[in-house]
Structure formats: C-alpha cells, structure tokens
Length: 433
Ligand code: CMC
Image (cartoon, rainbow, N blue to C red):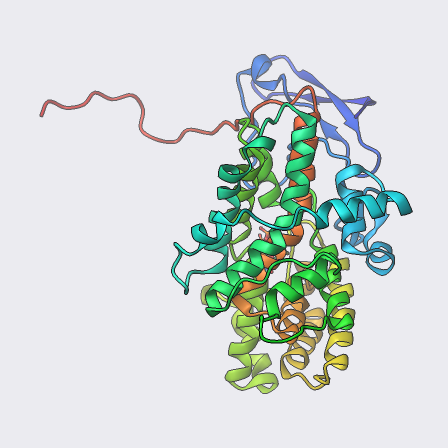
C-alpha cells in the first residue's frame, strides 16, 4: 500500500473543523481513503451496509475490473490461466504467489495428492446425517469437523501449521464432496487413487463403484478442471469476507472455512448455480423457448419476486469473463457427449440473447455471470443439481485459505468488528411487574 500525494478532506455543514484523511494507492484499481481515525476525530462512523464503497482489507491475490470485465489471479488474466494451466497450477499460484516451475509443480502436486485421504472416523461422522440431507449441510458439518481430526495443524501463529492446513483442505475437499454424494446414493465410498490428476481423481471418487473399472473421460476432466479454475478465487466476495471475519477472531482454519461454506450456500452467492439450473428446468417444463418472452416480463416486474438467476453481479458491470469461458466449455462438453441439441443450453442462449438486447438489462448493466452456464456443464457431466454449490466450495477453498493466510501474515491485522447506526429504543426503565 503506497501513500498518495492526494488527501481527502471531510467538511461539515455545522461549522465543525474539516478533517483530512490520507489516501493510499494500490497497484491497479481505485485508491482508498483511510478513515481509521474518523471516529476518534469526529465521534462519527461511516455507514455502508453491503460494503458498497468499503475496502475491508489490502490484498495481493485477485483483482477484478468490473467495468472492463477483467479478472486477474496474481496478475495473470483468467482466460490465459484457463487455457494454459491446470487447477493445481492455480492452487500453487493463489497460495504461493506464482505459477510453479517444473520441480515445484511435481512437489506441489505430490503433496496435495498425498493428503487426499480423510481420517477413517470421518466416515462414521458422515453416517450420522440423513441420506437426504442437502450436500451443503453435510459439507458445512464435515469441514467444521476437520478441526476435531487434525489438531496438529491448528496453531494459527505457526506458518508451517497454516501451510499444512491449506494443503489438507485443498486435498481433502474433493474426498469430502464425493463422500457426501456417495452417501446420498447409498453407494460405498471410493478411496482416492494417487496416479490420477486432482480432477480425474475427484471424478473417479464420484462415479466409480467397486464393481467395475472406471476410466476418466478427458473432455469431462478438462471441463471440470476449468470449472475449478474459474471458481478458485474472487477477491472479497461474501464467503471470502466471512472466512476473513471468522478467522480474524483467531479461530482455527477448518472452522473459518466451514463458515465460508455456510455463506456460499445462499442463492445470491454460490447457490445461484443450483437456482439457475432449476429456473431453466422449470422454464423448459412450462413451455421452453416459446415462453421465454413471458418469463422475461416476470423477471422485469419487481412485484413478481422473480430474478433471472445467473445474471447480474455486484462488481461486474460487463460480461463476466468467467461466463465467456464457461459458455465455451459448455459447447465443448455437449458436443463431445453428443448433446449438441441440449434444450437447456438452447434456452439459456435464448435468454441471454433477449437479455442483452433488453433495456431493463442494458440500463442496469446486467450480464451473464459464471453460474449461467456452469450448471448446464455440470448436469451434462452427471453431477446432480444439489451438488453444484459443493463443487463451487471445493474450488473456492484455495481462495478462502489463501485470503485467510494473507490476513494472518499481516502484522497489522485486527479482529473484524464493524460498528452500527443504532435505531432501537432509547434508555428506558423496566416497569414494575
Ligand atoms: N434479474 C433481474 N433483475 C436483477 C437481477 C437479476 N438477476 N440482478 C439485479 N437486478 C436488478 C435489481 O432488481 C436492481 O434493479 P433496480 O435498480 O431497479 O432496483 C438492479 O438490477 C441492481 O441489483 P441489486 O440487487 O441492487 O445488485 P446487487 O449488486 O446487490 O446484487 C446479485 C448482485 C448477484 C446478488 C444480483 O444481481 C442477483 O441477485 N443475481 C441473481 C443471482 C446470481 O446469479 N448470483 C450469482 C452471482 S455470481 C457468483 C458468485 O459470485 O457467487
């Protein structure tokens, strides 16, 4: 963070003395006004529910330019990363600051691969859930429970412990998600197989049974790997901010990531991919492309409570670059699986076409986000809709843990503690009773 020559001055209409604040510059993107001394000097807080204009931290991991539709991980554009790297390259990049060279890659991949087994007792813990429990309910519980199984990496003041926890989380998440799925199907858990890639191993743990050999389909493996890459980090979104806030109390990393999983579940965040596919399926069942116009009228009617899921974003006011890559992958996967005429894909393309020409969407700068096409890809691969958000959580774990680690490595970090504008009753006496 670099001090700018500029300063910001806050003046008051009641004649109180103006207050001057320092302004800091990042490497790219908007400057920030440092208001940390505001309360001490004025007795007032700033008011910004929803954090519309508040930078809650400094970070060197991910950068988004919402107007340009640009996303960078550690400075690298997402489209280049998606085309030239695999997910474990991205994990190394996000966690350690740069892409691995050949030796680093071999070492990192092996480290993750050799941490993918989970404690056998976790199988019994999982069996306590109902078989029809939502996978995100199961995952929130399983990730939180990791702190009860891996005590030896929970000293957050020890950088080695933090590194071990990070690797454990990245490595075990696919195993946990696949276990949650197998349990819901009443099928036996499949143990990891170390000669497969991170994503190939996940596909096998999901879809293999002990009854026959499972062969990983390379197109499907590449598509899922891309989904992981596109979801790996997204700066200070709701779940990442939740992980930071939760972790700022000094809690252990597994507890902090479980909080992130819980936050991600909501339909305005990671739950949107599930909600988007449900919307497409409902629309298909109720008339399909012929009813798109009618549906769009409902979306535009504020009293209907209907939103076009997979559209709009707090930061992107242009096409989400992840959505473009996802649409490409969608075409590739459907073609390779012989599903070129998938009616949901046709429906999604039609909704997008209409939305991009409609004044309502144009004026509000609403474009497809990553979730608009990712559900169609996952459905084609055979992943059930209820598991979509768990896949997102699996991929986002590296971002969460890197952001948590970045926060703890900052010598100036403090517990997160927002203030409020109190509008409740004034002091009053309890009446005699
Ligand atoms: N369909 C219809 N109208 C919309 C939509 C939508 N999907 N999104 C925003 N709007 C309208 C909204 O009604 C408002 O209109 P007005 O100005 O007339 O009141 C305007 O656009 C601004 O919307 P907002 O809700 O104030 O914007 P926000 O930044 O608070 O919300 C959002 C962002 C992502 C929650 C919202 O766009 C949304 O609900 N989208 C659908 C859910 C979704 O796809 N979420 C996934 C986000 S990307 C994955 C992730 O990061 O988790």
